[in-house]
Image (cartoon, rainbow, N blue to C red; front, side, top):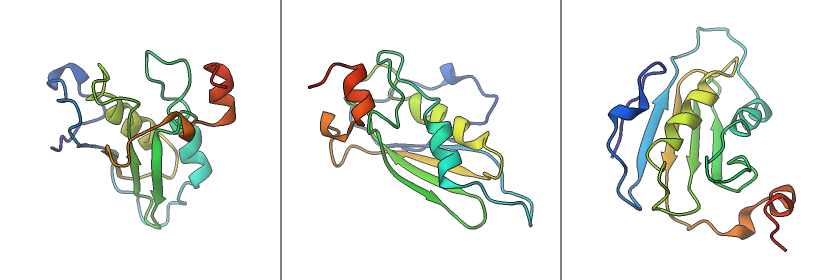
Amino acid sequence: MSFDHGMGSPLGMFAPTPPGEEITARAGEPLAAGTPVASEAAVIAALRTVHDPEIPVNIYDLGLIYEIEVHSVGSVRVDMSLTAPACPVAGEIPFWVANAVAEVEGVGEVEVNLVWDPPWSPDRMSEDAKLALDFG
């Protein structure tokens, strides 16, 4: 299932995502020719601003980001997952991610794919996330 979500659109217009369903969120616009393209580090910094409201650790350090592609024209593709398919905000988080990445200077169009394979596990968390959540 795919939804196009404008940057100013209310998130409430989307029905909850059925557990385990893959969705694609989009944001941003093509970069003007000659605009310097953002680095992957800048995209990661934006990803670290997004949090699942139920977990006090950002989605990047939780290991929810599976892949980041920054293309030469400034478009960005992110594959991500969630800790559980039944997450109450599963249908919203990909749009939060797309909008956060689209705000980075040097990023054009953004596509965020919510995927469930491979399933997320706590092994994917950074050491800082494990400490914050008291995972031994």
